[in-house]
Image (cartoon, rainbow, N blue to C red):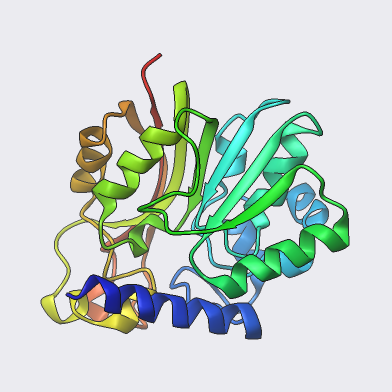
Length: 251
């Protein structure tokens, strides 16, 4: 499929979500709070988080699994309106820094507005693509990402970029959608399925191999959840999985 067309459709879908607040995530239910708790956000997380920032687009809570420390510099790939950026900002404290990168201008604007309104001084949002990060080499301690890399047409390039910007010894913690078994060809070619976090999902082992090919070591799944949702297509029932992957850059 045409990569530019895929990105155009994804941008269009997420710009609409930023404006209207509606979610296209296949893991989401009608009750956004219950959905948040089901993928790993605690009651405390949700109380700290600006309500406008949580849009029900994730498939995990990478900030809870990345073991963030005071003073660290964190990068969120595909930050959206900033839910995980703001949670990470609380964990790294005033001496830390969190950067959110997103290719949808409307999401960047929304994140910046929320940061200003709520007085976050240790965060910033940068417009850019995760395959070509607007971030310096060896400048990041921890990279997080939440149900975004599946949207990239070039996942190897994305992970290579992540490796480039991480400092030696840095770590990557991503929550993302993968599959067990191949998806039907018509779904792979559907732009709606791409922007809905389905068509771009790699087979689980291929996903892990892609991270390793980018240079990462100690690649491991530290949690996963299988979805029985078949409202989009009954052929998908039981095939869609969210995984939480931890990997490290050599020192």
